[in-house]
Amino acid sequence: MASERHVIVAGAGIAGLTAALALARAGLRVTVLEQAPKLEEAGAGLQLSPNATRVLEALGLRERLLPLVTAPQAIRVMNGGSGREIVRIPLGSEALRRYGAPFLTLHRGDLQTVLANAAQAQRDITLKLGVRVDDFATHPHGITVQGRRGQQVVDERGIALIGADGIWSGVRGKLRRPRAPRFAHRTAWRALVPAQHVPAEFQQPFVHLWLGLDAHLVHYPVKGGRQINFVGIVHDKWQETGWSTAGDRAEILRHFARWSWSDKARDLIAIPDTWVKWALYDRKAPFKGGDGPVTLIGDAAHPMLPFLAQGAGMAIEDAAVVAACLGDNLDNPVQALRDYEKARLTRAARAAKASRKQARIYGLTGPEGFVRNTVMRLTSGEKLLGRYDWLYNWQPPDHVARPEQPL
Image (cartoon, rainbow, N blue to C red; front, top):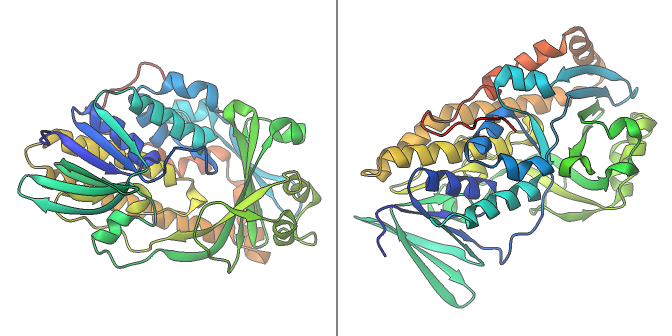
């Protein structure tokens, strides 16, 4: 099989599937290798800011996404100790006016399903499940990727390999990038409940962000408003890997102690019967590049702490840029991948640094926390939103088709 226009993607998460769609739109043929035997609805909710949603719009996903998303009217920043609102940062129509694309919330599993269905409908995309990438070898005409499905060996030849296989990337390991992910001394807890189970105030289309002692809580509607996604992030020493370790409600309530957190917040945390948790990791050193016809995107390249809600956003941006670079330089795919890496280095590093800074701001307590809350209260929500202009105004490459209507 000819490999001149064939790209192999390792991983069928948000990064890998978005890359496959963007690559197919750029005129390439794509094989996606995913080690999971089936794609399951897993993970937490997502906040997708305009820099990400304009890419999804450009890929023609508007109609598929509409029943599954919510466009929150604002971010309500709440005082975890008093239970009172500190400030309201406008989103909704203001975000659409300011950035030309919406700010949305949805469940990660819903986005993955939309992307997978769109990919499977494309004749130039082949999705192979249950295939683990074992190794790869470069040669003058590109790359050969060896995978394994049970006892069966799967070989793919192409012009490039894109590792989109997450923070514990096997492709990254084969590139001999020695720095292991770094534990951030925080654990994230997540839960999903029917919207009718929460007080009416918190069923409304808002992102609620509670700031308090040694923890913060975020919740917002997903699945078209039918369910509420909760994420609590706490300082912790627990650092097992994995995304879905069972968590005890009594344990998370201990992190949101009665003497420092309002009953209003604790009552919300007590609603879900089931919580799962995962330890937070990132890499401080930016990804500076792959080797030959191999590169990384998304968490495999530059995992993001969740404090700026940009993990999915950076992955989606990466996918658009790597596809544009390959589409523009098919005669020299190795140079195309180096161009992609150069284009993404500064921005991804800035987003990662901003996420770590946001973590410190969220973690302020005592007098410093009081000053933070006071400054936020005295600053208009519009000005607070403007601090993210550098992030939300990002545009995909010029030749990516623009949709006629925003989501």
